[in-house]
Image: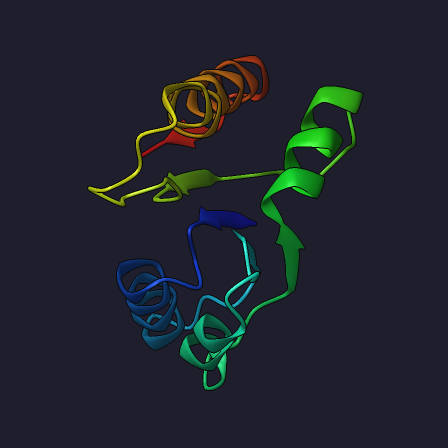
Length: 112
């Protein structure tokens, strides 16, 4: 399996499409679809499953078994240049990335 965080965004969904073009469809897309419009980016993608970013983090922290994860493409982040909530940015961009990196190290998965 390949996990793509931020997989419903512009770059993430195009990465999923590129993986699909290489006949890879065992993909878990992780994102925040609060803005439901982003779901359209995945409409023509072949994926195994989708998880909300907060649910995914909870699963990681609870030790859920995702099976053999070959790689995690971590594209999920708040990219807003007008976001001024420093705690939110640290929690969403820095801490989330740290948890994911440590999980990849523990499970022998590539972290890209």
